[in-house]
Length: 414
View 1 (cartoon, rainbow, N blue to C red):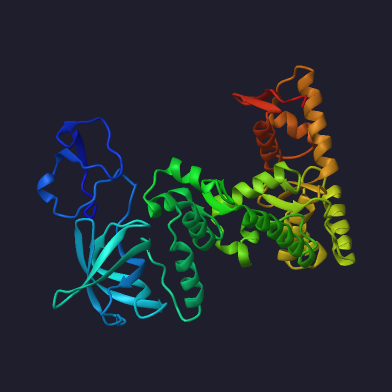
View 2 (view 1 turned 30 degrees about the vertical axis):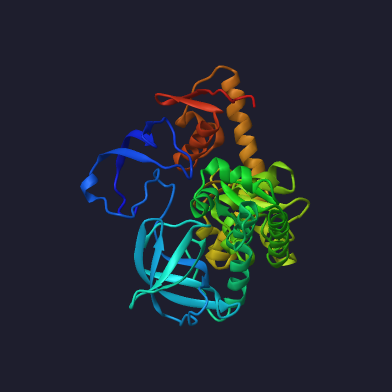
């Protein structure tokens, strides 16, 4: 890097001696195989995904005595390792005339990590201005609104202690969790070493992310609080999806982290889950008197129709109500167990459904093979309703299709 060239290392040497491995700080010579003609002075050798290139870095600068203070957008030469690139200074804060926190905006990509030391020179005429240390290889953008917090973050990162720097990085950049690989790249460390150092402080690894332990506890409380609010505002709903949780503070939480946290809370019986819907333990669906009355009228229609239930459109015409109102009620009744949904617009009254299931089970236990016609006669219904019913039973393993008949399935008795 930069350039994303693929090379293979054939041989390693240090001080003229062949070696099997090299460590940070050792003098090294490498025999490379690949498109070596494309390499130029200053490129960095790294494993795939180990480092990244950047065109804007957050740095702490200290000027030499006698050098005039830097000006915002001043053009400079940036020298780190064997790289030299042209860039401009974007000032954030000055502790005094000699020490400055700034972003460096480079005209070409450069490879740096936290803690890299560099030299700054004037663009023209050539003159050494001072030096400094890299705080973040990819500098976040700042505005007047968040400038103070960005300066505070930079000061916490400007330390010599690696574990303290990682703690500060996760606190400021991983409020909602940050991938372990992103932290490893920012500090130029293997993922394994990053985890070991991070877990020495108040940081935990969760779902492939690093996050402050206290923040994880707060997120659990926010999930419970969010679900409680949803239950209060929509009392007729039995549960809510992950998308409903991603609001407010939780909106910036990575999807996989939120999913894993919800899974853990379900396993601990803090949350209940039915299908894709989540709810707080002990919360009951609260129906209004009007909803209760409507459910009763719909159930009467479903019961009176036997195993040939009317569609939402037919129910709406009978009750002289809008179709969307009926559809919403049927979905809620399914969640409450008052009816069973087998299709987009196919709902059976629960007792009628269970009765039909019992008849099919009894017939199969007697060793019978059932065709669609047999089940239709048994339930006094037609193919329109019997086919989706049998397909549902196939999916549950209660029945098993063999040619044009149904036989006993593996889950018939469960």
